[in-house]
Structure formats: structure tokens, C-alpha cells
Picture 1 (spheres, rainbow, N blue to C red):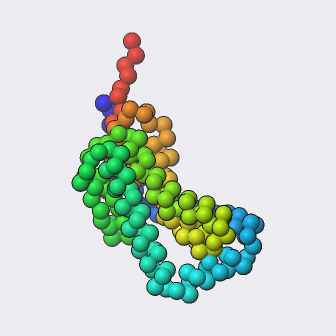
Picture 2: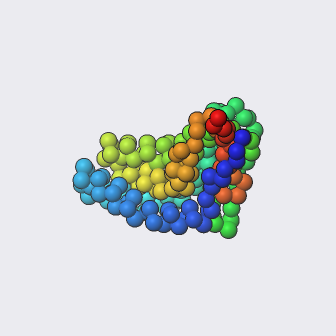
Picture 3: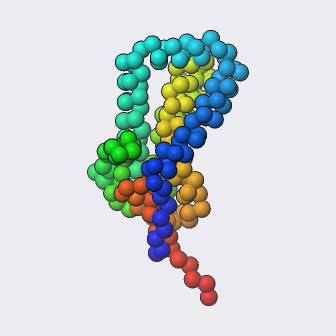
Length: 184
């Protein structure tokens, strides 16, 4: 097996997220306004901005949910119970879930993507269906929060299906172990 590093520094992930935020919000809000108009958007934004306790609760709860979804998905799909640790890298203000064991790449990739789907994409879909400016803001916020996860998935796009992932202990991403095929 050959070991490859498919990770990226947290500082670089934070830089990429700063680049992504404006186009994400412009496109997301633009589509919402096109479908529902400004009134429902204003209502949703006001609902979050005029209730700071609610906004802080949504933010903190969403961050905790994001990391729990990573960990629980990795545990469930890999069968590695009690192998996830949670914490915060204070230097970069980055919360994390870290699986401490090697797991199949499919389980790693799905655990990496799942918070984006649950806390970002599903609220966005519901916002566009229901006309909820509040869900729109939540969905956009947590889609943006999953920028690092999207970068990891992009980096893993060419990894073979039978590979094994080992979550990087200090960076976003993983070491990947792939079978070397010798040609005869």
C-alpha cells in the first residue's frame, strides 16, 4: 500500500472560504429573490438579526451538529465506535471531529460530506420550496461552513474505491492508502 497526503492546512481552508462566501451568498440570495421576492428574504434576515440569542443558538447549535454529524457518520459507516474525538483548534478558530482509526474511503468521504448535506443543502432546498428567508440564511451559512469539507472531497475525487483513509491529525483531509498495481 502506498500512502498519499490528501490534506490542506486550516489557514488555506479559511482563505478559500473567504473567497467562496460572496459568490455563494450572491447566488443563493439571488435565486431566492427571483423565486420569492424581497419580502420573505427581509423577514428571514430580520428574524435572525433582531434575535441575537436565537442567532447565537443557531450558530453554536449548527457548529456542534456539523461536527457530530461528521463523527457519527464515520462511526456508523465504518463500525468504529468510540473512535472519534472532538475539539477546537483555537489558533484558527476551527472546530473539528477527528476519527482516530483508518476507515474505508467511502465511509470517510460520506462522513466528510454529510454535514454539508444535512445542515447546508437540505435547509437551502426547504428555503426555496417554502419561501423561508430564515432557512435560506441558515442553509447558506452552513453551506459556507462546509467549505473545508468540499475542498477535502475535491482533493479525494480521483482516489480509488478500495483505498483506506486515515484522518489527518492536524490538517483538513486525510492520508490515503492505495494498493499499488505493478505492471508486468
